Image (cartoon, rainbow, N blue to C red; front, side, top):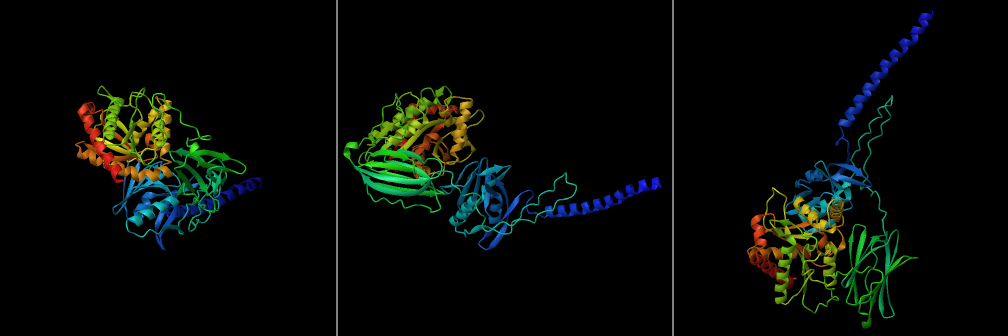
Length: 546
């Protein structure tokens, strides 16, 4: 009896265990079938609509506070063409083009620079764009190419089923597939900086006073340039305030991008003071109506340090005088620039710059050099001089170089924008290392700052000048070619020396010092004069026609 009692419990678990294994096997088959039926393996999916018509599902994933979608899949659904090269994806719709650059918070749409809500991501050959920015870009591309741009995210997307915990003895209940709302709500719309509430005006003690009321965290960024004050705020729920000026002596313009507004106060009156105040928060900008206070007073903004080896810039000119052209001879002093075939880049740059300035003065223009001898200037100081001089155009002269095993010849003209390609980006990295003034950790820091430029290319100043700089570059390219110079291309890259310029600005790479034949030419006085003559003609014709 004792034996039979002990055997019964052993047979019972065996029977229940068999039933349990069969149930689990059946559930596993069902789960596997559901997972295989999902449109995207391991990724969320949003459904793309054109008006009321569904086009298909687009893989999506959440990164931080943003949702990113596959640009490649959108291209396929829209029947567009796309090509990827290094860090750039080019999408074509007819003759119109869209350029996405990895890690950049802006994109090229034709010649327009469009700011994005978040930086584009490139992962294993896939291009991911923030979902709202993707709609903005592709709708604009469709409209520019004469097609219907009514894309939207709508219901019908599904989310992958979560896998059951491996340690769980029985499968957990699986939630039903979620439905994406139409349209999806932004993850977060809370501004991370000062929010503008309004703009007030008044006249006090011979001054025209503008008062910007704001709230929220942080202080507004304020930049002073010749004849203008620029500042940026976040927009509140009320949107853009009334910024019209009741006084003709002070003009105000604005550019909205995303949830921000950039303001520019321009006046022929001398700027007297910029005063940030608290309790409540406000920014006071005073312009003096009194002729006795014509000297610029900067009580709250740091004044750029003077460069001992360079004459102090005169006060901003009036538009009645000759047009001002600032020529910047790249590198100098402790920074030789590229060194190859026994030639120092800084010497070539200075020689050509001196010739251009001489020819411009002969043609009746006010040509000014950031350096007229072998001295070192920071990149920031170069554009500060151009801004303080209120220049009409800015040109930075350089010579190019390539690593061993690579070859190229010809002149390149660059403007400050998203990089055309990996070579342009690499060139910008090299030129910008001048900021660090060394190698190792300091060079890495300069590289990091260069890449950070890709995240701020959608700002007011650069958007305002990008088209003008493009036109300036095209004039120079045309006259270089007509003058017998081998012209390689007009391209874009994030150069610090162009970043702060408040006027049309270009960087000239006159040739490649790493090519023996071209190095000999660049060191030849006759060829230097040939370059100077061509560039001078381009500058003169551009200034006559703008």
